[in-house]
Length: 123
Image (cartoon, rainbow, N blue to C red; front, side, top):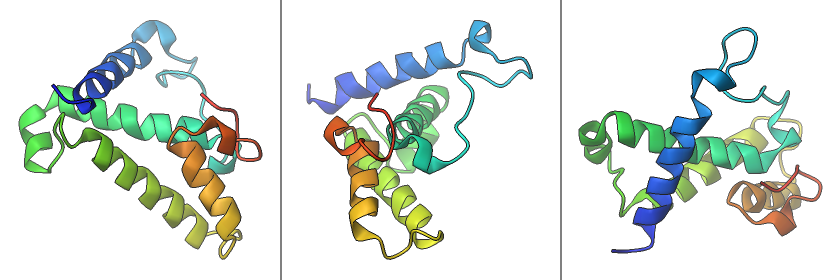
């Protein structure tokens, strides 16, 4: 068993917990209230991407596998999707061409708490 499998299973359990009805907000949205901007908390955005991927794998493992998302590829796919999202955000905002801020956000979203100082709380 490789190291990706336990993390994917852990994320699927977290996704199930996150979506429990008892965690719903007043308007019926699942989980805790969303932040106003990605800049507010990159670590949670990275976690949300991982949880979404885990939920997709749990809900439809066949389709997930057809799109290259398996227990073995989970970590690499999560990293790619997180990096793509961070890059997309920085290229389409007033923060474009700020390589240092983009790299800090990328590292924070990937789970490096040392990089979260100015970009949000570590998870």
